[in-house]
Length: 237
Image 1 (cartoon, rainbow, N blue to C red):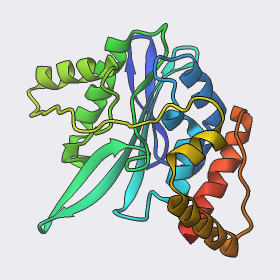
Image 2: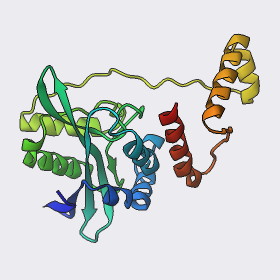
Image 3: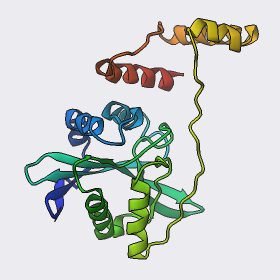
């Protein structure tokens, strides 16, 4: 299937992006919309998701792109549903499952909506599209949907209105450690000498695969190349 306009709803159009070249070409528009949305986070940046797609999407079950793009009448990007379609085999039963891009690597996921657009209308249009395409999928699995986002309530409302069977659970939490002061002081205080020795051993092992260095990424512009390097190290490791 090629990229095509699927549906016109009120003042915007929905397109399905299922070709890799079309997905990769969205980078600038994608990140601009994300930065102006309530869902602005690393795990939804185009650099993160395109890196996952290029290096890890096919490492388990087969995945196909199913990115839904919503545009205004003037062609302005106003919403993105960063979906993919995976084929699972469960006890001999073949299931086609819609999920988020970045599944397994991302702590959080969400739909990306412009603050100025009608979020309810866009959620309705996305569910209308999925209903029209029901022959292509069996299950929608949106785990890692950010719990504090309004998307959860909007989607549940649409699902219940259509009589689809649904379940929502709080099953995962993103852990983080606040660091006060400089990293070296924190590292020496919190990690035992044996732990630091193990880290040095692992660092030497990484360097046998490829010379490595530690860098602090302070600019979003440097993120894309950095993620590509991480993906290469991970695949070698």
